[in-house]
Length: 241
Image 1 (tube, rainbow, N blue to C red):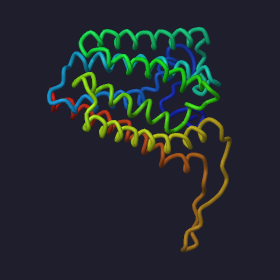
Image 2: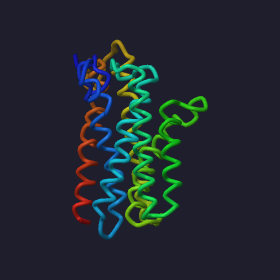
Image 3: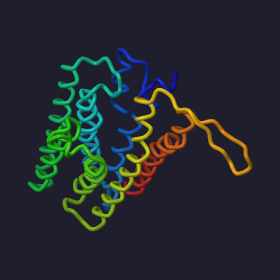
Image 4: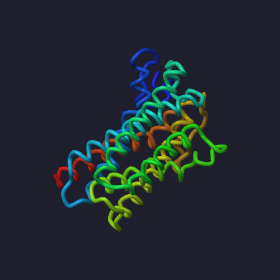
């Protein structure tokens, strides 16, 4: 039964369960954590701006990006109608842009560059515009790792600093590591019917290989990272409040 699920957090298809699965809860929380980690470069965090930043990225990443991604081949195998997915995508991007526009009233016009990049990045990546040129591991790291961290910092200090750039690069590196782990896991869960083989040790003993045995180490790492990163973000924010 576990092997039949397209992701370890996916529920049985149908009804409200499809919307839970669509949100990719562990990964959405993980990437929202980058916003909070970026915000922590400020000496003291403005809780209001942090909440607005988190809300904007929840709409853009948790809702819009995942809804648009599900339109491309139904990787999560949900039964959500196509028009509903389109609507969620449009509403998510619109809501995120609205939060950004509100931010310009205090942070100034430079925030427009962040708004424009985010509004382009979501459909460009998830709808694989320009022949999938933006649907790459590097673009994933920039869009879902570095960009949230840099935006979270900018919302607090109103500029791009050496500290915020370094934190953004660290979040990009974490996203690349996430991608290296999750790509083979997704393939094993969604496209591989069976695996046959065995490991032969120097002492002559053997161990059988199957889909679960190959998938388990990477997926275990992903599960723990999806807990560790939000805890790290929470601790950093708590230290600045």
